[in-house]
Image (cartoon, rainbow, N blue to C red):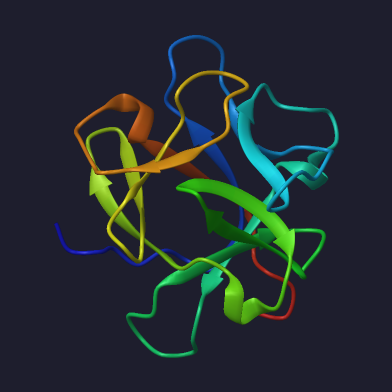
Length: 149
């Protein structure tokens, strides 16, 4: 399917695992390549579960990058087919596109691999895309990115 555009903004990224709602979350402790991105129940404080999703370049059709909403230097990176958040230069952030699927969107890396949430508490990973609910996500728009209203 062709990529779909996403409104730049601050989002909560929900998983489609069986059970209570879960969100993509930056863990508190960095290891190896940064802080692992996991899926977990919502925390009372949003700063580890709200993400800015913005075009990587200011051109139509550009892929998107993610960074923590409250820390514009902490972007999503990929290492060993796992997803991390790290304070690295923006040029090193991973780029993603979105495809519409039944029940939500599929988030794809620039290599065509899909975000996958194996289970609660697991680090999100990248896998060859399949029609599985662990690869379906909902982007809940929270607010515009400051300065883009």
